[in-house]
Length: 557
Image (cartoon, rainbow, N blue to C red):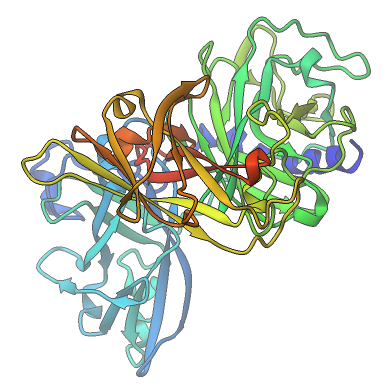
């Protein structure tokens, strides 16, 4: 793959080596507390908690700088970064769900110097406490929920004339530029994640001059990266891929160079994205086999394509047989609207098919022990076996045009309501018209007339359909089932355009996710088909009902 292989090698050296030492690195700023819980009241953070460890929070603070503030003040700012929850630490989930307060251990002499504290640019209530052995600057009412603090800053405004307090070294108790701080879930102080900001990271291992082994993945590796499905959701096109391990794979030894990547430890996947679309991937999300979200590092360049680096190294023993990790890659429809394939370079292996070349980045492991990563050196290369992922179009059958980008119509979920005391539900959707901005298919559906709406719902909801209306007037419908599931087929009356509020009335109480329960990555959706032009147009889309609230067991550095 030429330049792509070289780029993969560079990523392995620049990013992957750091992961080799991540497992042995100490927690960010964890330090010892007295074994007697009552004695802990005499040291910062001066309260009795269930967990004081730094890893009891998914967040870390990083100093972003000292600058001029307003009204003759100096501003010391710290940014929240996501470190993640490495194990099932209940406090880490609690603080991830809600971060309410941050305390800093500071010099008592600076009590009169602090003028204001902001979070995400907004002033917050703060208190400077002087009744303890050291000063405490307590910032309250942060109210960050479900990871919302990531990327936001806490800024401390200090009177510029108090020069001994205008830097982290002067303000914070330690006096060396580092600052001890504690994150709380609330004023009840159940969880007190105490960290030290400003620790120097461990030095990286020496860089290896070796390139990576890049044989064909199907013959030389147990890892498999496969396309699962693609959907148009709202204003985005989402592609779903599965990463799994084929334990039955028969690996052929690499012939051209010493080494074996059959049981390689992996830290990322790269796809040969078309250079014209570098930078246009809207987001990438990764979920473990049990639905926990990982926060990958994503790099998009014209040379290297799309590079997805996981926050933790994976071994072939980490994914159970029959399970898979899920990769969710999204583009805005205005940038790329074709659900049949992603915008990739012409494949080196399947040049005539919609496909995308990729490689799995990682490291060799000891023979017979997939958990033991071999340290890369002049004789031990990394691994970047290459493969091709094909995009199939199994759901697109016949000669009708299914592309949402070619249709002037969109269907969106509105709500599901149930009157008090009555076991009925009205589920409403809105069909709107717009001008297609990027038609790419045939036949031409940009001026299609809408003739019927096909809406896939759960079997339980389908059994309770009582009526369907369009803008309050009855619409003819039937409830059917095909290989994709149960659906309502509702006709648009000939005298109406089909836009407006469609209501499905059910003779039982349902929530929106009880009616639309199909899961696409992070979304719960109702699949739909908008038919028109006497069968020539069959616009396929998804109406997201909700974004699933996934467990906040995120993994990251």
